[in-house]
Length: 188
Image (cartoon, rainbow, N blue to C red; front, side, top):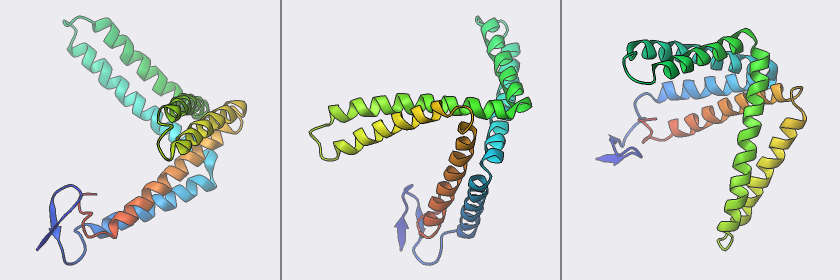
């Protein structure tokens, strides 16, 4: 007898799904890392900025190599310029991670504000439906959080990036633990 999982693949109905122990270990590790990030938000913000900086460095190198290999194709200069700018941005964030974390906070505030505005407008579009008020609440709360983030910038905004990183890690670890308990979570 087989039970079909959420991904459509069959899993054994009896016993735990393969790899369950690894998923539990990963979930616990993510939760512990998240708790550390919440306990040390400035360090977590700097680590988040460093991670982003190193990823941008890698992407910049890849873009430059791609531009060099596609030199005969139109747009070479723009591709090279994009790669150099991405590389420089990554270098700046790696060398000055606190500035990078503060910049992340402004990016996040911008996303919150735009998303809040869109969700607030959406609330009035779906207004006849039950629960439209929650959409409006979400939109207005997002706008308020964006404004608070900008008002406190850069002082408290750097710590907020650390808190967000920590909460994200904890929630990710929690859902991994929740799914690890399911016999049909072999693909997660």
